[in-house]
Image (cartoon, rainbow, N blue to C red):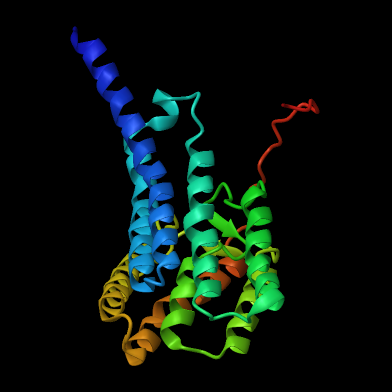
Length: 252
């Protein structure tokens, strides 16, 4: 095998390896659901944390492996969205309902359905991720929401208000920070995100009796995230719109 052919094969294997890395998040969703079925919520959150780590790193790996160039026929973004819906939406909402953090019976099912429906629409919006690297509308971090509702031990009515309010915010066209790709205050975001990750790891290790003081302190980073997102939304130039690529034909 000559050098050119060997280089092409290595690039091909690297690109498929990155896609497999992304797809492994679906397996982690299965493991988390299995843990939820056993009421092993600490294990479920641990699997969700691993899935979040993969989601935070697969984009960088994909760009380094030039997956769009090497495998132009494979839509890695679609794969990423499918896995994200499982790990960031379905699994945490199932956990909230199973753990009794939402109302019981039909009322609880309705409340649980709201984030599922809102995020299903949100994921399909063409501007869900803008060309200048923002999320439009609340970016479906339901895993983080579920973690804090579980750790903080708020009453069911408060949890319900949080889910309903954030479900509405999915449709409000406010731009939210894309932590790994937004240049503004990137250093602060990275340091704050790292400290937040450490605090979450400690809280996970403390389950089922985590420190609520540490949990409240760790909320400083989500608060920073929201504040910076709102500042950028109002001060950054309008995001460029995507040019529609369809020709009016119905694809099957």
